[in-house]
Image 1 (tube, rainbow, N blue to C red):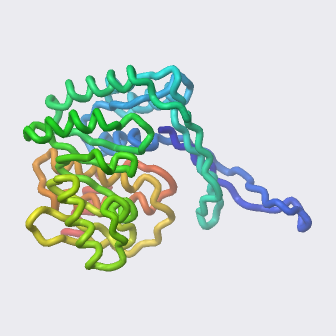
Image 2 (spheres, helix red, strand yellow):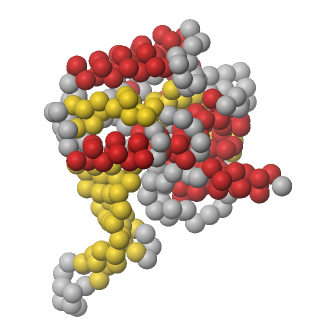
Image 3 (tube, rainbow, N blue to C red):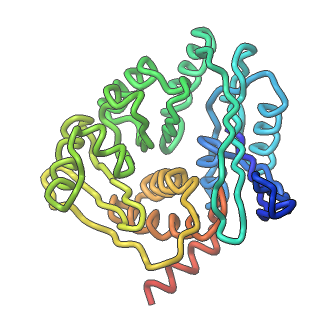
Length: 306
């Protein structure tokens, strides 16, 4: 996915003008979606191979170019000539950084079966040679039930560390992930429980552990922090530091990237949630998708630990 951010100042041409005008002051294109997860892994020092689908278009070429520039392998990025590379343009007005509208460009046609098969084969062949697999699911078709079923077979054999950022299109297909990271809304939807308080939060977390047969469920709750659920253990909550949050585009990408890296390096679930919580705070300080630098994250953790 390619994200485009257009920043501008709102003004009126005249007092009588019925439509406000946004005078563009800056414009930037950044990696979005799963590509943003990859960028975060690279910025934090991890090695990563991208696996996904792009269209035969300029946006797809740009994504591949930028991924290679940041040091990611693109061996698993497949081009589908009938697919349109997903682009999202966010129009943001200053001085309060309010998103006015988002323009989405994407194909309504499903990804071709042959392309999905090539992607699935690549992932299964490479997975056991990696320290872990990150499933960044945006519900656009690349992540599908056959892929998830094949991965679950390997996960059941204990061969692969797998961290999942879920979407509703596949709520019924996730099985045996090491860690899965729904946000509060997704957790409520997947569990069929409205999360209103601590009691309903605990009920939802417990149900998702059973439903997805996960080793861990980390529910991200925005300004309320994160809550970690594990089988036969009491939930653990991770509050956020007070801050003025502009917006949280890409925060889930950062969380899943950081959790995967920490677990792949031998950290436990509490370590992963703690570091991810700190990293997500940096995303709230910025406009749009960002890749958190390792030195910045390390310095913040040391500051909090002192």
